Length: 615
Image (tube, rainbow, N blue to C red; front, side, top):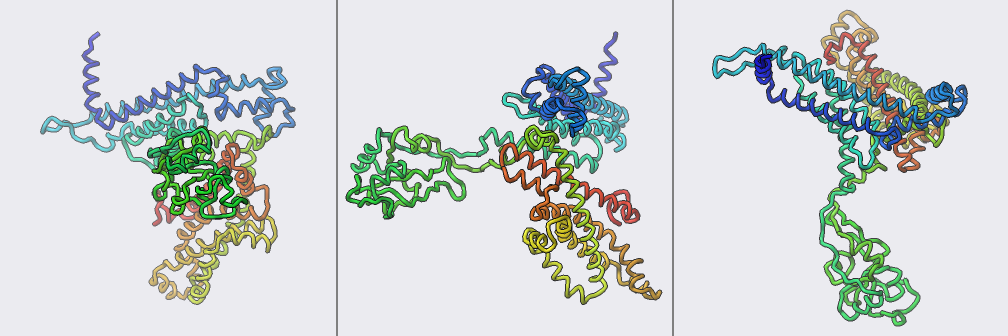
């Protein structure tokens, strides 16, 4: 068989592989390799491996097996009923977790295989588009170069490849919520690098990046940045440090030996426990720390610093380890009067007791200047995405019958119902006030300043008073939500009704139109785009107002109570649940915003063309 056709095909293919397409193909190939390596890693693991059992679906499977021992009709969770039915089919009193873990292994293989298949399809479509584009290039007469193809030719195959890459990206993003962080395992790192390569491929893919693709790119970058920043902070022990000079000291056998050295002038200071020094010498400045007089103390010519500035940093940057409060510094009486801080003693000759707290915790430790404290990225303050997803898939309390996702969904619906009433009342009030201000200059000048001033009062100060006036219940929560809702509707209604030109108003008046007719025929249609803009802002604000209103009202069925309960016990167990509550509150706000946006699309079809911009 002749190899000339293959050589000719490779020659033509190499011509179309410019630098951009070469980077695109390389990124897709590397992403495929990482996905296959992850699939191989999981296939080699046993079902009871930590990477499997500690994953989100693994923990959920263990909970389902635990709940399957009860009667199916008495179980409240559909997942628990499914596990009980499965156990009955297998003739087991309680479902063996290995059954669910084996099914999970098959599902995981199909999932990762699907990701690799989508990436492979995107790779083939990119190659096909590059080859077809090269066939349609017209050679230039000068220099033998190739002319730039038509945009339609350049984008051939790009849309199909982008759809495949986008689907693979979303599936890879979902893995961030499934894979746990296990010591010694690089599975999560492989997923992060695969996502980054897929993001690069999407950026390099020919064609215009649409709004949906841009949203997915931003969301993926946010999640990758979340995990990458936590990994970076963990590698640095959550601090970026600059090494500093250490303490120069002598370790002696006893405190008396160190103080004798201080009296003789062999050393300039002694660092020891403050309580021990208080029994041996007077303080500086003088105080009533000891009942004995100076002459009765063993070392009357020495002084320990009772008031000590322990800061050692530079400007606002601290030194670690910090000088602890239980330690103090002993000096000779003549030296103690002008010494007030640790920094003044650092360069002096120091003695301490060998093996004591002062040596083991401070003097022998390396000193570092803390350039940046990254403790906000630890698991207590910022849990992994998988920990938040796992909180959804676990019961709110140990051995509970309902998952936290079910509890938070019910709480979100209750808060949503309160927000709807507050939104409706606030929007109606805002529309009425805006219409009155638009038709009466006197009312606008007299009342609008008070409307603006009402928004300067913190909602946390208003909420308890509303609860006292109206009683603890949904009505007070709706009023608090309306308080945050009416202001943007008022301002935008006023602005929208004043937007028609004076010529338009004069034209209607020339036809003897009344104020009411002008309002409904001219001012209101002109104000609708402004009003819907305010309604979208007010939709999310009403959810915030409802959550805040639930706190002083004592309502236990909403998201406010869930956030309060989980934030009261700030620990590694409750923090992911707190973040899960925050995610649910954000989801409620997004749903409300989307509903108002859909109503805007329906009501303003004549104002919103296909591009979405207002005419």
